[in-house]
Image (cartoon, rainbow, N blue to C red):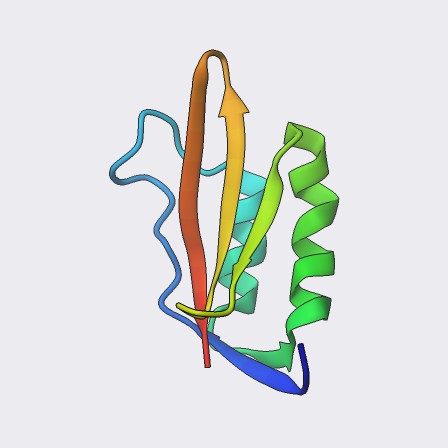
Length: 85
């Protein structure tokens, strides 16, 4: 991962799943939307909250998005949080 990227097209956090994206993570995603920064720095910010729910951040270099994967109860959840370019 090299150089700065621009983040866009955030997930609203409430559609299409049985559970919403946790509010602290939605807040960080909202703050990253429209910003330009190193991908590693964005992942670091998200990881602080993602660790609390025992989730993980997925970096898709092919589709250029940051995703969130976590388990709640018996269900595994996945969201494309933000795209980057």
